[in-house]
Amino acid sequence: MDDGTSARDAKSEQLKQDSRRENEEQATARRATILGLPYVDTRAFEDESPLVENPDDMMTIAEMHKDMAVPFKRGGGDQPFRFFVTSATPRSVLTTLAKKYQDMGEHVEFALISESAYRVWLLRYDPPVEVIYDDIKIANQGDSETLAKVSQTLNTVPVGQVFDFLIEQADMLGASDIHIENLRDAIRVRLRVDGMLHIIAELHRERYRILLGELASRASLSMASTKPQSGHIQKDITRDGHTHTLNIRIETVPTLFGQDAVLRLFNFNDSLLNLDLLGITQRERDILQEVISHPRGLVLMVGPTGSGKSTTLYSILNALNTSDRKIITLEDPIEYSIAGISQVPIKTTDGAQFADALRSVLRLDPDIVMVGEIRDSDTARTAIQASITGHLVLSSFHANSAAAAFARMIDLIGQNPIFASSVRMVIAQRLVRKLTDQKQARSATPAEKSYISKILTGVDFATLGVDTPDFDNLMLFDPVVSDTAPFGFEGRMCIMEQLIVNEEVQKYLRGDVQEVNAEAIEKTARAHNMLTLEQKGVLAALAGHTTLSEIARVI
Image (cartoon, rainbow, N blue to C red; front, side, top):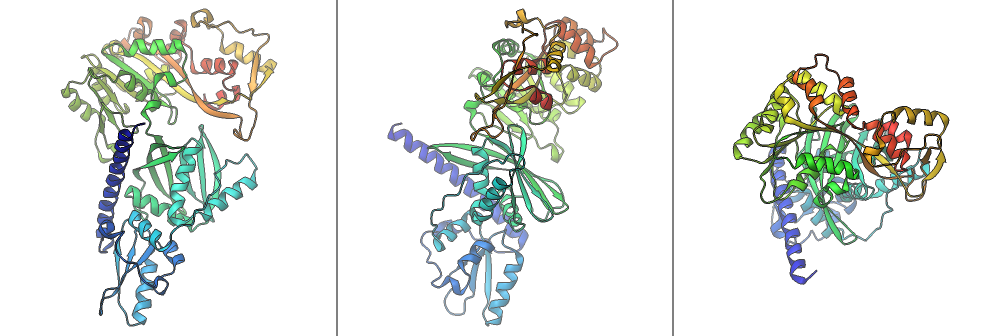
């Protein structure tokens, strides 16, 4: 990398940091109004302003850490003592300090500063001695020693670092979610890694205020709210000389012992949004490419939360994102930012509807539209109308399988000839954990052979381009635990069910067939070489990519 590129990258990174700081200062100013405190933007004098000569006379370093407050200089004459406080500083601390100086015949003033400003001032009072904390490890079932060690680490990380440390460790472990949960006597922290939740630590109750205070400050949430809240923040992660951005979606809900929070981590690396990285077969890739190459039609993605629908949809958009196409997305919320695509946030919690926004963006003459989710008949009809008037429409829809999606859509809008001619394909998807290379081969048991033979009955292996399994000598694989893979799995793979809408399937959608149900539609699709999720999962297990028990857990 030449010096010019390095300088541009450094300038771009600085602009990002300045923008985030500006947003934080604006949020702090609004919070100061709510709290009834003066607000001070310290950026102009953070490096030049002298510190209090004897800070321990006003507040010890330990108290600065604990109470998230710092003393500022006292003016001359009869001017009062001043303290910079944050939104996470307990009100009881303010009361105690005011009374302390009142008893001394002095007056004290408080001013609200941002969390970033507090960290800058704290570093000036207490320059850090570099401490290397042990990386978080996920404990196996019953491994209380590892759990206790990680808990001790998180309980000793300084106040201003614990939140960032937790996010950085979660990202390093490849976690998709961080769960912060209130128990009676502790705070439980769990990470979802490869789709499975793992307890990593139980923290002291006093850490609750620190973690939730950081969440409230960074995402403009209220620690005192009695209603569920949503917010988001971004954080740059630097590791091994490379930096990537995490987009973190935050959901909180009040519980018996406090507000529980879930942080969903999305990696802002659009190079990973690639159809070739989904792990699907070449046949599936070719079918998908053929469908999305058409200039119009409706493509639906179905599956539960966490099944990778968004990643697949974004990967399709990335593949279609060329300079000669206009692409618009409607999302609640926007999970990935892709250059060259117009992404419109839709806040359905505020009463906005996908259908209203979709009608508006269609006037902008897009070639491709992605609707975050079809939730009601109005959005469904509008999306269908758009797909037959020269637009390729992509969307997600909640259903357990591709065939079930058709049955649900018919319940939503009725049997409709327009729907039959608009929808081109429905994709159902799941993510299953992948075995490591240290997996252990074994012969299938008689019960497993019987199950596999039943599931794969009727599959045309020649059409799939694979050899017919030897059902009398089936081999399966078990996970092997290691230091780097404590459960024998590493990463996840996509299991995809593709239902192509042909003439036979259209009969159900048009109303030519009176009795419409998911089983009948699936039977028709299987007769035309569609593989179900369960069949795809079994084939993946036979290929050594995963296990039958993992397929049973997910599918």
